[in-house]
Image (tube, rainbow, N blue to C red; front, side, top):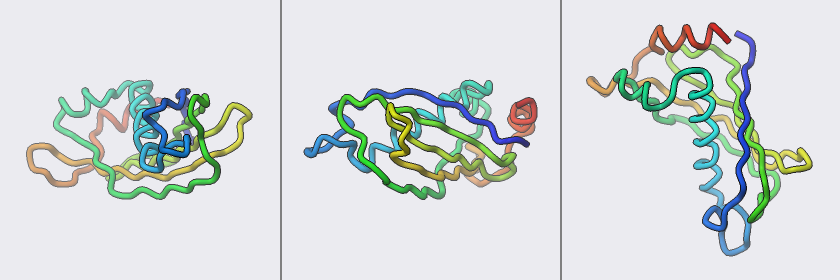
Length: 135
């Protein structure tokens, strides 16, 4: 599978920031979540479809690196990529850039597939694998 990417834009809201006027460190995860959700929607698998099929994908690992501050009212770009076909885990590589295309932040976020009836880890559903194989 070739690496696939998707990007969204986000205007840094006052609510995203701390007293210093920069994005509060934990809010990067919320913004990255928006990027992952939009990525999945674009490939044909909105979160609602996944949940209705009996699968949820909680994060099991987050590795985030803060390089530069993103500031209040700044327009940022979030790039979300997947390099590997999901089998039991879905690993997202995410990067945040400012308007001059400077890298501000990067993260690797790993999700696992969980069956909602058993609350146990499971393999990626075949219908979702087919969506990734079409890309």
